[in-house]
Length: 264
Image (cartoon, rainbow, N blue to C red; front, side, top):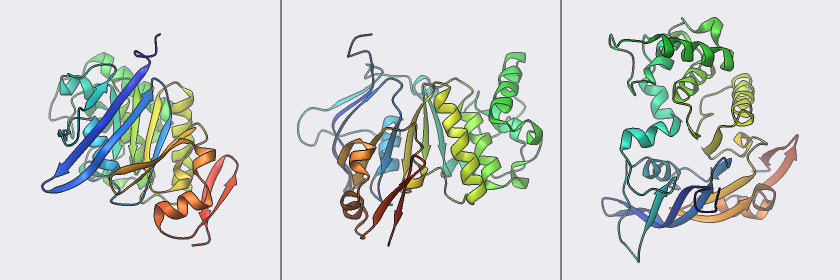
């Protein structure tokens, strides 16, 4: 594989506005095929907007020079095809699926990019895939439970299952641990580690250092719509860098390949 085709994502000089407000400011980044990466920054940094721009929900503007905006070497995509290359799990999705549908139905709805099934025809292949995903995520025993009866951690695993139905190249997790208690956080992290070890690349968007699993080696620091750091996590997750990122004095502690901020 040559250097160009090994690039999964290429952004150069990407700027995005919401109305009159510039929310992404001349972002440039290259992500390789299979690379696990975290985007870390405070609320309002532009992290979710960056993900939505990848997914063609937002589009860059010509603000200061030419723009490069490629996924898998291509600038032009059918949006449905593009979104099949990504599995997305977000808090918005969590809210959308807080309804009277079963975990199994949530996973199957991924084939149709819908919220629920609405009497859609389910093929034997779809059923087999859903069964495989339930087994892989270790949720077979609650697959017929309704989402409204599940804990946040349980429902989050079914949303991950929904994101996996098309065998995406990348699983994108946007602030994935909001509302999770300690037990659910532990289970969630173990699930994501299993997915990463199984060959699906992870892009994690978070403001919590402890979300960054050991399999993620690269971290991008984001603040005020800009990337302010990009490199190996051991070089970026330091007292000074994280204190500047969040505008609060912290001390960074490493334990069992995880990082934690203390002292604030």
